[in-house]
Length: 196
Image 1 (cartoon, rainbow, N blue to C red):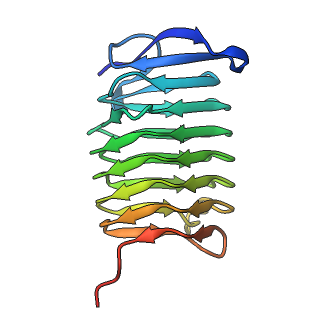
Image 2 (tube, rainbow, N blue to C red):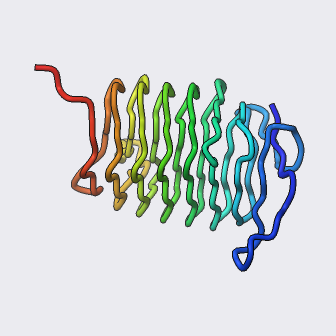
């Protein structure tokens, strides 16, 4: 279990890019969830596959998987928690005990061009998350829900609303998409055909 910000390389006027690999130093560990915490704004780029999750708790973060794999058999793949303006893209996430990608109390985030396979939830949006975009992802073989936009529950937890779920391929999950479509914009997705 390891993660490191190996080097910061200037990326023109866009600030620095932090490269993330599986070697073990640089970011804050969260042992119980087998993940590392990204707590500073910036651009993060995977430069190898990871065997643990990433938890983002900073605004204005771009996490680019660069096509590499991420798996976490203990908890989630990527969790965006209590922040805004985060982009998670080009991740290949599989085999996570919880969600492949989770947004909790998050706003104005973009989840795009990811492939999530064989997790409990593929993409899970909860805790009053609003105005997020879930676009052009592939989600397969989730044991619960492929893309879940949690509704408010009787315990007075806030539901997810104002989110856009467009142009995703969501196949062979126990349930493909679960969302209150009166509160969220869900359209143009390819889901498992109903059996006749």
